Length: 595
Ligand code: OXD
Ligand code: MN
Image 1 (tube, helix red, strand yellow):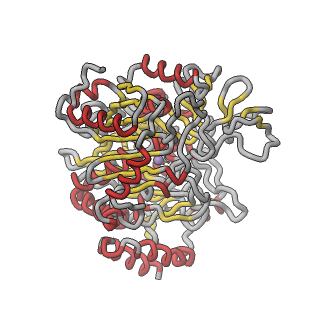
Image 2 (tube, rainbow, N blue to C red; image 1 turned 180 degrees about the vertical axis):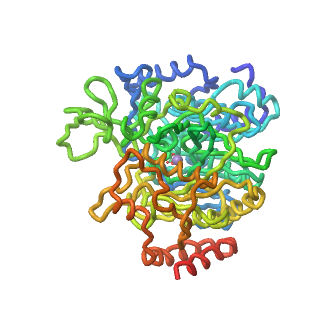
Image 3 (cartoon, rainbow, N blue to C red; image 1 turned 90 degrees about the vertical axis):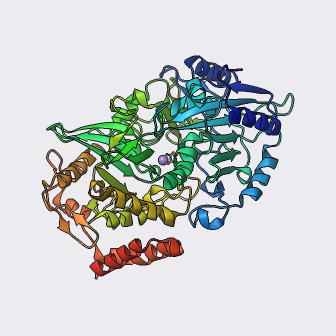
């Protein structure tokens, strides 16, 4: 056993889980390259990992067709009272949920090795970082955790005998009888999957799924659901936000944190390369921001993750060249198609479609096939350090000072390209009422409009009404040092269904306008929904957007906005008396402005 295994709580927990889950073996991870290679060897030997000739040290995995995305319906926030979990979370009484899960966990690791994975979210030893230990029976989880978090025996050293950590228990829920042949992607049926959080105890129990956020427990479970509830208690913020640094031609830096729902282009914006001369953009994180008020009164953000777990379809040299360059080696691909020359492929990649490939279900695929070659939620797991535009300060323990918050979503109509909030409370109102058309990142219908406040609906570990209040409280503490708040919609379409805005690198033009607003270089038009760019203030040099399209992109249809009001009222009604009075007031003022 590892020499640094002296933490009492950890040793007791390992003993308990071993007795409960009855694995054949226990392996304590140290995060080394050799360990990664060992796990990959194991996965290759069992035929689960497919080596990719075209990308060194990269492998393709295919999940079970029932296990392809996060399962929000099976995700629980188990607080002692239902009220504390609030209307946006599934809730079960902790004792009842634990009993159900204990029955499932009984003997669930038979025939398998139990991996103990010590990890840090955030740079090891940073005061903002948090330590977790995941116990899992999936070697696929081990290799993904190696990339997405800092797995290291230094974490155990830091824990010492008495240090605290967040226990994250995971099982794929597929014990093996003696001599039984394993399947390629063992997992439990959907009604046996549970992704459970006990925020009062800072505990995570996940059962039955091996995919992404259901199984890599440092990400959505720890860094968002548990961290958001800890952050509320401790006075900081854990948000579903990318972080980027923008530098203007004079060398002035601006730090931006942006919240969009899953699969709405966060990774693309995080790595965007400006199409406007002299501006530079560097990536700090693409999914999660932890933010604390610094000694100078400003809000500082770190990216607690160590890698990118990005949606592959749609990623290409034209949409996100920096992501493509990040993916050249040392990458895990899941549910992408396999080409005949040993590479991965997905819909939306550059160049011609392959004449033949093996689809994500392992079947022959040709362009005539009626189904997609890659699953729409196919993913890449890649080290952040490989991104050519990773900011040199991305691991700075104290983080970077945030100047701008952006909210947004996928709306084919109504919402203009960009507008600014009148003030912090109005900004919180924009975050609280954000809506987006649903995507394949969750199992469920795609394309329905849902209110997704702060892009946190699936990730807030407590009552969302209290979360709104927390945002207002943070604003009160930040005062005039609070970031300015903007709302964007890259996805507005014309009547004949075409995207009106080119997006991607041209989104830099919108970020430039925001920076110029901050510096007081440009004015804005006061409208019922917020402050809109004046004509000519968005830099369109070098692109050709017909002025009618630009007009449509910034058009405010008062009737269409009035038609949104009942939906916003229903949305707010859900939060009952926990809806902050200040948001009720914002809604009244909005209605008044609409007339
Ligand atoms: C993600 C998600 O994987 O939001 O980042 O679903
Ligand atoms: Mn996400």
